[in-house]
Length: 385
Picture 1 (cartoon, rainbow, N blue to C red):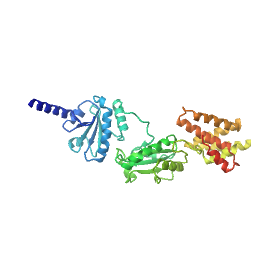
Picture 2: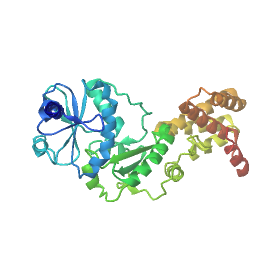
Picture 3: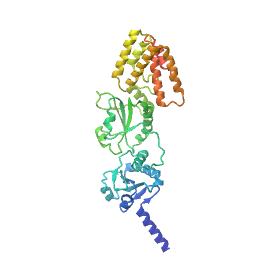
């Protein structure tokens, strides 16, 4: 019996010296073994310095468990560690911890740095992979179309005068934010190929590097959604007033930005078109040679002064006007048929489908005339493929 007790005691001592793994692949350490497990081990280590009473820490905990699980078969090359900084104040003080959780990366060569990335599984795994060159076993999702913003990157994105930027201020502990996230991601993906006109972005206020933004915009309730219009005359953001379903967002963005997306991501009949350019194309087919020359000059001016999506469309209007002048009005039908055939191919990418659909929408305006009655114009415009 005494032999068994001694054996258990010795095993316990060894277990504590190495750091304990309880219920997950995360190594739990204390200030007594922190140096041996983390600092002097020679193994790259990512550390969560937490407090048991901290809400943010509780939110991070299951993510940290998954991160450790993702590297469970590579523990000799990368360690995922946690330490209660409230109970182990010597460690917290040594590494300048002023809030919980604080994440640190030890490269195994004596260097330490703060982990300043969003605290989701993919971002943390990506950080580890970049630092160590060791891939995780996490299945990667398609890159999010929502752009993360921080104190030092915010102005460059949000105040871009060429596009409307919609920013959601969120926090990982916020239940309403968690409900918003999949919807916001879906809407961002719907407008993924309209990034020259509209961008959806997020400020994670529970992450590192966002404290100045919280003060600057007086963020008190979460989530808060602010709209930064593509208008130099508007210096302050507008609080998003609409509903928070995907349908609400799509309707609002289409109205504010002048786009025409459907909830499934496809383009509507107005996509790619601009009223002033339509006014030229409506006159073009029936115009005399001299009148066409004047209309082409107008299109040239649009190309010269256009920016973003308007410039792209102006170039298409201009090219089709030139083609019609050379090949005749029958070119319109032939080209619409050709583009429609491309869209119907299963191999056609979404970006290519968008491009073809915009061209078809523009071509159809040349098929109309300024004398066409409004009902006929509307009917042709609604003619979806």
